[in-house]
Amino acid sequence: MTTKQNSHFGKGRVDAMDLNIGHRLKLRRRLLGLSQKDLADALRISVQQIQKYENAINRTSSSRLHILAELLNVPISYFFGTMDGPHAPELYKISENIALEVTEAEYKETLQLVKYYKSIKDSNLKQHILRMMSALSSYEVDITSEETQDSGSCILQ
Image (tube, rainbow, N blue to C red; front, side, top):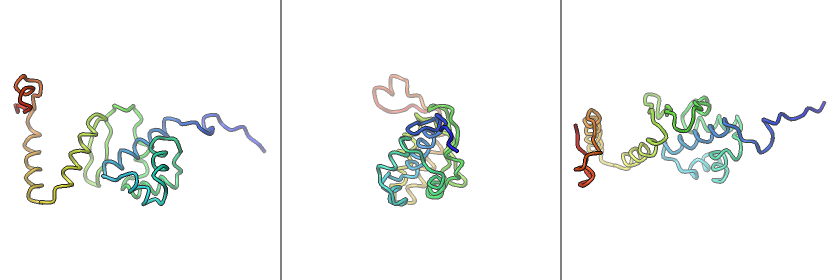
């Protein structure tokens, strides 16, 4: 028996879930500091295929999602998370005990901080930075004052 293919699932059609899966794949990969090549090598596929998954040009099969979830240390449900728009806050799980709630705009800054922190080799220096960040997080930073704009410094309140 031949059935007419549902146009929603037609070839070449990308839906919101495909885009969401690709977006979350890219976010998690970058949060872990992995390059597209790192992930491609682990999967034994081309970098171009990773790009196609991340940009929703190709759909990611369920078996591939399962493998990706294991490699990226997330439950498979991670890929089917919120689809409330690109600027909505999302929860990005870093490890079993740590999660970050960040907006799309904050995401790049968060990645930069993690990247710089990971590059520090001295464990004592890392501890000092953590204490400093903890202390600073209890202050409000005024970046709108004229002094700040002239000197490039922040005023802690």
